Length: 435
Ligand SMILES: *Cc1c(COP(=O)(O)O)cnc(C)c1O
Image (cartoon, rainbow, N blue to C red; front, side, top):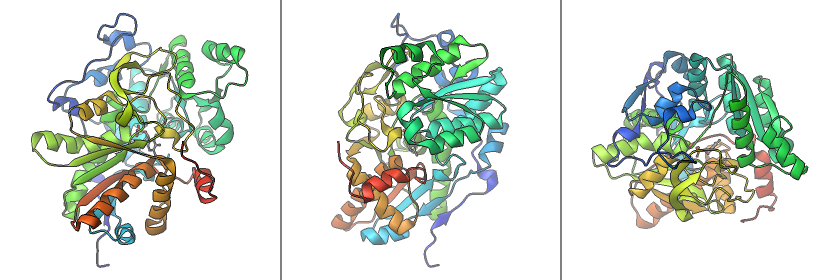
């Protein structure tokens, strides 16, 4: 082979620390507020919902946080993940750019989400939690948490949005295979679910309703806690194994990225790749262009306001300072279910405000066009969420061609799309529309 395309690390090179960007920010992220008093939240206010070890991590400003050995042992099932250079994709685009991607689809659940699911299950286990409750849309988060809970011997209860429960059975079956109990939300299992069903027996459900059900289940039963798969500081923290590995792998490749790209729903996979590079931007004055990519139908960073807002529809969560479309915003049913969230991680929102990152939005037909082009040159069929990043990579690569200059582009391939082929069917049969 004339060009090296795969950059793998040794098993012993799984990171031993998570990186906390809060330690290096020029100004701190505004704190979460109590929804009633509007005062900064105290740790004990969150204690019914999360275990104290994760609450302390959420508020931490320590730069490096040790990854517990049992978490690293499970990471070793798929980490370190490879970085590839997409040479055939470069050729198809006729670009002088070099395009690299970090392959997070290699995890058992098929995405980056187990990086935090495993950590959260571990911290719950050592805190004495017996059961974790969560919500899931299309099922990526629910399946990741089901997998993680099983490996630590915890029970897992998932409230899955009703439309997905019926229309997307495969991730539900993954969750059940890993031993989770899955309810179609709104369900008869919680007071809130029963209330919603009494008002509208045919309610299709929403992420907001499912979050409210999962929180209510957790706080009303002993030994149960709630878990969130994106948005929060500790989730972004756990994902930083991705960017740390990438820094070493780009050294192996002998290149430094000029452009760093990730898709954003709640912001966690983007944070995981970007934060270790943002650190270098702050401390070493590097000139990376760091690009967050979202759907035009849910344009949180590109069209939202930066203000305090609730994380859920039922107004049960603390107020978070973030870019938001409003907690009552109902995003259209696009195929990238994981990007349909009204808010954005406070840490990602904050570095956008500080000008450390840029954001761009794409409509879904352009996104699937990019996904198909990538599959036809690199082979990998990516998740619809990931395809947003690829749409932006294509535009950056085409710019390089037009300007006749080589740049190095790195993106996070946050997950594979083998359980999302129905969305590809919609695109390939010409039935996909932009909303
Ligand atoms: C959930 C998901 C996303 C979006 O979530 P973030 O927290 O923004 O990363 C992106 N890609 C894949 C494959 C996902 O499963």
